[in-house]
Image (cartoon, rainbow, N blue to C red; front, side):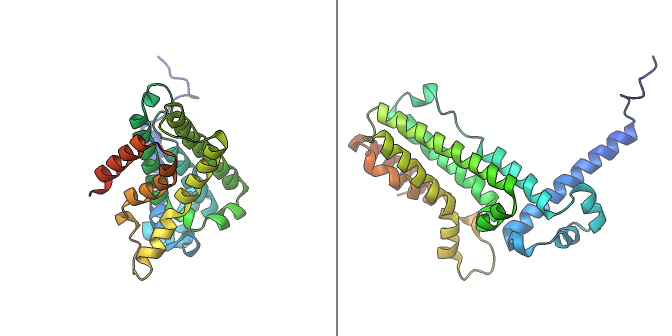
Length: 237
C-alpha cells in the first residue's frame, strides 16, 4: 500500500527529531544548573553553549535567546509545583490527615522552589522583564493560596482549627509569604560565607516547620500535639 507523503516520516527524520529533542532537554537542564549555581544574571547563552560544548548557533536553533529558555524553565516549574496532593474528598476525613496533607503539600512546594531556586533569587527582576512570567507567577500564587485556604478550612470544619474566614485568608497569604522567601533567607543565614551553592543540602523540613508555626496558634490542643508528632517524625527529636 502506498503511504501518503504528507504523513510519512522516514527513519532518518525520526532520528533527527529525537536528537533535536534531546539537545533541547540538555540545553534546558544545563541552563537550570548554571542559573541555580551562578545566578541567572551572571549566565549568558555563550556560557550555556560552552558548557554543552556546542556552538552558539546550535543553541539559537533551539532557543532564540535566554529569555525563551527562562520561559520554558518557568513553565516546567509551574507544572512541577502544580503536582500537589488531592485537596478534597477523603483527604479531609480527619484533622490528622489534613495536617499531614498540609505538611506534604508545603514540602512539595519547597522542593520545587529549591530545584528552580534561581527564579526566586532574582524574582522581582525576572517578573519586571517579562509580562508573561508575571502572569504565570500570579497564577501560581492564586493556586497555592486557594490550596492552603482549602486545607485550613478543612481543619476548621473538623474542629481542629479555630479561625474565621478572614483569619484563614490572612493566614494563607502569610504562608505564601514565608514559603516564597524562606529558602533565600536560609541561604543567607547559613551559607553567607560559603564558596558554593549548598541549597541541595538544605533541610526543607525546617522550612515546612517554620510555615506550620504560623498555623499552630490556631490549632486546638489535640491538633497541636499531632502537629508536634508530625514534626518529630520529619525533623527528629
